[in-house]
Image 1 (cartoon, rainbow over the protein chains, first blue to last red):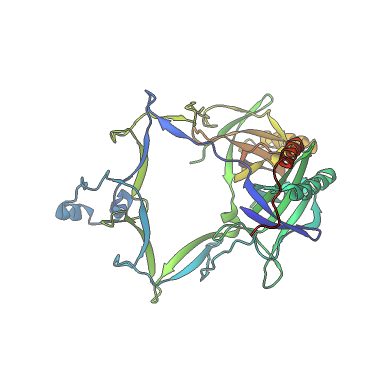
Image 2 (tube, each protein chain N blue to C red; image 1 turned 60 degrees about the horizontal axis):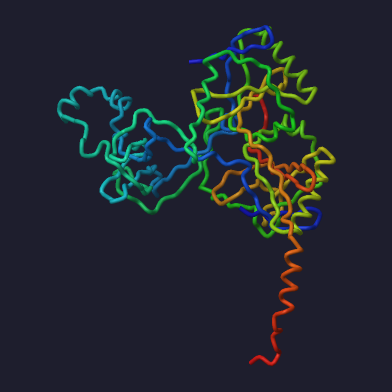
Length: 228
Length: 208
């Protein structure tokens, strides 16, 4: 993933990479043989017990319809599935309106026509490292960091740019606020890594140096540390 | 049903439980709905690969089978080199001795997945733990212990942060920080190559 980043009127296209990758895991049998991970049909969700038990005439309906496990279907291995939208008669539909529903903690609901989120880290207006510096303890007690990403160089010039930036932050023992801007309103906008991705209203940059190497971590937050 | 942890701080042992709070509980939960022109909600279903069947969401399952397609009851998790993974036991199975700490700088190496605050009927012990957390915090230290609701293969840690007379528990994964160096070019090789090139005939400008 790339990021268009600016600091003190210098901008550059840099790399963003995750701080950790999950160790790949497979399973084997007791005798050390390989296993295959397969997807299979389980059952019809409409006939799950909690739904059936809601039916006051369950006994009569079972007796009359004589249902049984569909041995042709249950346990059948399947590979890919395609997501489709159907109406109440289970007929596929292609024209529909999409709504965003927000269920608030007080039980009320808000809705709006679906707004597709757009990634904004590679826009013409760069992601800006602001001059606002924060104490790490203050940040730790204020926000929850869901995602951490490394900002890395792609050539010798960007190495120098990032090394100097990391050294500056490391020497000051501070984090810098990182902002993205709405290209229309030119106001601060939540940082979104990719189209349809999560919005992060706060982002901070941490810098560390060790000898001739640097570590720049972009900390992303979508939640304040507030006890309800 | 509330599950209680057995916590041990020096010589004191007491029970405590986690109370969850999340982004959803603070700002609301976002979901999506598809509707027709008449406002009636539409639903999402799945079509299997050969197009022969519509299925409802959650009506498939996945598991491990052998070469002959037989279900494997006891399977062993291994990494790419065939080395067995260690199972981390559930934190509810034994007493948690609160003695391990991390520095505040190390805290920023964690990606946080869940947030709770600690609750206990033993208010004196909870107060004691709160004071201990506060004292450690003033020395740039935070208490931590391995977090596993069930037996798991995924290593997560719970970190205790004192805030407003309460103890916030954040659960996250640790990632060792990586430092990046510039790619250094070995000029000696380049010089040798240049010397070799001197022997090569130069291209004439009269090329056509």
